[in-house]
Structures are given as C-alpha cells and as structure tokens.
Image (cartoon, rainbow, N blue to C red; front, top):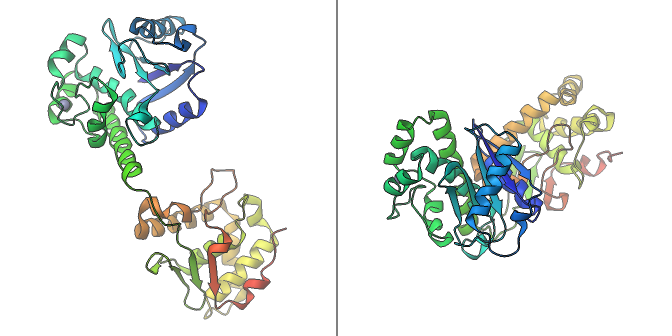
Length: 355
Ligand SMILES: [Zn+2]
C-alpha cells in the first residue's frame, strides 16, 4: 500500500528528505513517496481553507490516476484556517493533510519526527475507523497515550508522541476492519521508533565529546580512556583492520581500490604482525591481510567491529566509532587520528603514507 505525500516548493527539500528517511527507518510493506506539486493553492502565504488542502489531494489523485486504496496526504507550510495540525478529508478518508510548520514551537526535536509520526497516524486512524462518523465515536476524546487520541493542536500531540503506542482496543479495531498484520506491525514499529528518537533527542544530549581511543599493541587491546577505560573486545585480525582505518581514514575515507594496493597490504601486514607476535610465518600473515581486498571479508569484519562497539556502548554512543559509508562510496570512522593513541608499536611512525 502506497502513501503519496504531496507538497509545494515552500517545504524545504531537506525537510522532505529527512521526513522520507524517518518513514523508511523501519523495513515493511508501507511505502511512502513524495511529490513536489506546482499548485498555487498550496503556496499561499496566509491561512489555507481546509477545503483547498483536500482539493489539492483530490486533484493529484485524479491527475495521476492514483489507485483508490492509496493514501494522498498534503503537506503544507502555512497554517490552515482552523489551525488543525492534521486531518483526513471527511468526504474521502484516504485523503488528508499534515501541517509541516511551527512544530518547533511545541516540541524540542527535529520537525520531521512529529511530521512523519502524524503521517503514519492518519493511516492508523483510517484503519481503525474508516469513516469520519466512526472516528468521532470511537477514537479517544480523553487522551490515554494512544496514537488514536483525538488532539486539537500540536501541544496535545506531545503525549502520544512520547508513548509511540497504540492501545489494545485500537489494534483490535484495526484487525477487525481488515488491515493486515503486516501493515499494523509496520505502522507500530515506525511510530515506536520515531517516539524513541524523539525522547532521546529531547532528553539525552551527550555532554562529552566521544572518547579518544587507546590501542595497546602488545596487549592487543582497544580501550576508551574517557569512557571509564571501557575495553572493546576485538579479534586480532579485526583489530588490525580497525587500527588500519584509524590510521588512514582521513577526511575523505577509503575507497575499495585502496585495499587492493601494496601500500595497504604492507601497512595491514605490519599492524597484524605486531598483534600476532607468536605467529612467525610472515607468508601466512600476508595471506590473511590480503583477504581484505575482498569486499565481503571487509564487510564481515566491519559488522563484527560494529557489533562489539554497540554491545559495549549502545548504538547511540557507538556511532562515531563505526566504519560507515554506503556501498561503492568511501568508508570511514568518525574518530580523527588526533584522538587515537597507539602504544607499544615502534613501526607506527614508519607505516607507509597513503599515496
Ligand atoms: Zn486507542
């Protein structure tokens, strides 16, 4: 099932892409696509009548021959005459709008979080009660922290955003109305993730810089000195790979090609040899480090490193330490070399430079 989100050019492109990213944060069957509309009704600088918002959705639906079961939601920057933050069209409850502006005045978080939440919320409301009359009768007039709490303004939405929940009675109603478990589960996961992110962003802002990294090559250990000397356990080959990244990531990251070059094999070899002092066979050590020419081997090492950092630090604080980068793009860690201390490794200063 597809949800089409239409908006005028007055909605900043970054807000559109950030909202799209949030809606795609959980895998599942609900699809959301954004369309920029050249519709003068959407870009009026004064309050827009609700009917104009619904009409924009209807015109889009007709012009693009959108299937009846798809949703069309209009996103607007200017407020509407009733100052509603969102609504479905009483005459066609698969069409609605969400007001994108002014969230910052009510909620201390990125505006795309409540916007994405409200978009999914409209789908949930529809699937709980397909008609406006039923909604008015069934949805919660007295807020209980369910997505189906009827809220009149953005201030009241904070409560349901904080819970990110749908109550048992509403879930049952969605199942009775025939929404598939796949759809319900996906909607609930998206809302729950958005809610968690909102609470974290609002209440938890790290006051410390990420800890530096201390690698003792004799002990083959990686310690975070500013985080209570936490130890990140890594196997020697993964540690060699990670130390290589710390040394060579630089500002622009490392391309695939680097791992096929002699200087990289030489550097990895020296690092790994130091971490495996009992292994005397240089030929075997070299064979091991050359396997990093293979993308799959690097991906496996990268995900083991990621798992170990997250198991110690949790996903939020681990983030700067992870080796990141999209497939085919350069990969890098977020820790600059100035925060890295490598001890008991005389060869560190002699490692080859990146060409
Ligand atoms: Zn409910």
